[in-house]
Length: 350
Ligand SMILES: NC(=O)c1ccc[n+]([C@@H]2O[C@H](COP(=O)([O-])OP(=O)(O)OC[C@H]3O[C@@H](n4cnc5c(N)ncnc54)[C@H](O)[C@@H]3O)[C@@H](O)[C@H]2O)c1
Image: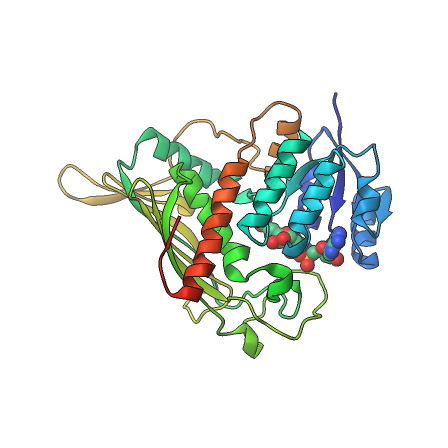
């Protein structure tokens, strides 16, 4: 049995979860972890019995016994660490967002092509069972022509650790849009099978975090920045080349009735679908309206429902990458365009 030997770069909140997922794959050995924080890397290493611990990622990357790395660090370091890992001959599973900008993302893509190694962005929502069902239903034509999608992830009070790298533009590149908006945008495009935007209009707001309001409980890094200068709410309208539109909302903090609202609604000519509820709505022959809970689309494309297992299966040659670099670049371009549109007050043509 072939074993893929992994190094973990970053030992924060999400690395702790993904490392367990990786370890759950029969063909994985977790070999090393790198993180400048003594406590976080020691905690992860001891909880998962990982032998080697490094303060610097380049020490880990020099280990010839490591085949692949999972990178989960502040966004500012995504492009440089992914490029270093690829150049060192490692396959890379990189957490979202791809990079701080599409220019950076393109550079990593070029490095990946030159290295001959596999680089995949870990868009975990794509592996959700209901998202898989929605994509399969869309492909089967169940909804008819889908002309609009409404995608949102809005928290009432869920800013990840005010004062940490998340809330400082120089280290994160952006706030709610890059952090959670990216998931809903990527998932909508994935389900619709269309990563070809033609125009974007967007607006971003900073209304809670700079007042110290809306703090959540995600993230482990230190609160070392005094300036909150990222969006805690973003909204956008994205037009695709087919004419289909996507309306996107991302909020870390918002006055709203519920604590957390996340969803994607697809509006088709024949039926509508609430993706995460797996609820299909349509009109019957006599005009009555009904909804069907629980679609029956047969076997899931990714029955493991896991990006980590998927990535390992890709390296083993058993699955094709679910997230292509072209798709990831397109998502990053749209995110850039939303910020640009917000700054200029104008529509951005892509
Ligand atoms: N896919 C998802 O659903 C998901 C969820 C949460 C976070 N993320 C992404 O994962 C990344 C990490 O987020 P988090 O929530 O774990 O943050 P976190 O603050 O909890 O952890 C970040 C870790 O990176 C470490 N780090 C900093 N510089 C480093 C370096 N040079 N080398 C190695 N480690 C370094 C920090 O010490 C810290 O332990 C972010 O890019 C975030 O957007 C993805």
